[in-house]
Length: 91
Image 1: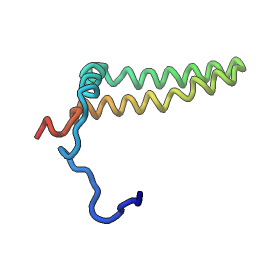
Image 2 (image 1 turned 120 degrees about the vertical axis):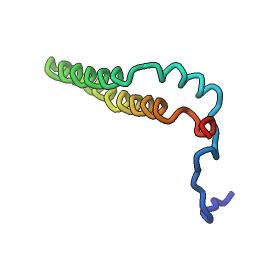
Image 3 (image 1 turned 180 degrees about the horizontal axis):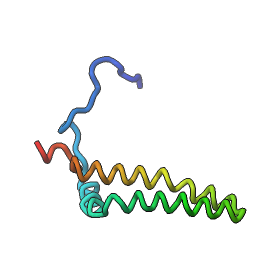
Image 4 (image 1 turned 180 degrees about the vertical axis):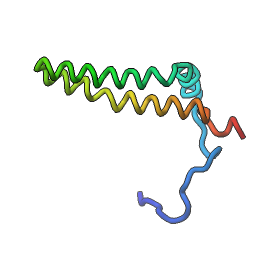
């Protein structure tokens, strides 16, 4: 199977749709305030620093790695609130 790199392959609003499962999940997760995700990220940073201070390096690394996912989830949450889950429903 050969990949086709010719032509315009961009996806435009309304070209693709989300499934009902995604819409269902987003209807509940969009009710979570965005500040919760930022608070969770700051909490992870704080907990990681505490673990590092008490010489629990593995726990510090583990908890410190939660920061990025919390921030990414917060961005996703904000985008769903601003743009909705599917461009087709707005068209």
